[in-house]
Length: 284
Image (tube, rainbow, N blue to C red):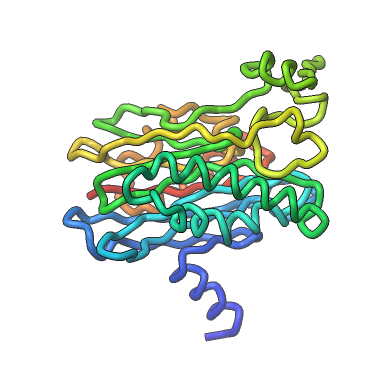
């Protein structure tokens, strides 16, 4: 096996996507219900380097098995999403009340991590990142959190259910204006905070932080026998596919990695030009 193949295999086993096009899969070892995951990333047509990063792994912590899944979609560089890949879940799990109140622990860790990113702006640069994270506790309890427009969608009996909230500037105009900012909507463009950023919440972005929030939307979803799978993906997918279209496209694909790849290929075929990263977690 060549050196490049060995490195790629190590990434797949660890479940960490890189800043280049990548793919991989894994499975639960402890859950009574068989759970598998697969991921796939595709570089967009922009001239800058790939700015999407992801985490997809199962980890044994104390007496529980945690599924840790995340999409980090960077802007103005890849240093912030790369930092999140390596630190956000550690910060969440290190919160003392994670096991008693995971929702509150996630909320605190998001905001603490953002403060650290801002403090390290000299090292990490002026860029930022959206995020959507999922923590699956013992295959039974799913804790979803997000800032920005990367999205989590659940399939239950074939019906799509969005578990995250798209933090769009126009929807949070009053909060932005109350902080002294403004929202622009120029012909042929999307709403932007201060004419620059197309999301109302994000990690980093020090120059805009007075007008941006890093407070995540957090939702808990219990996993019953009717839940088939869930999808995490960056906006490169959701710009060209509805939630139900994404669910319908992969519902009959049992292999999670194949399903994730199928979604990215469909987004490309629909002329998505953005970086596209996708994770599918399937309950068998």
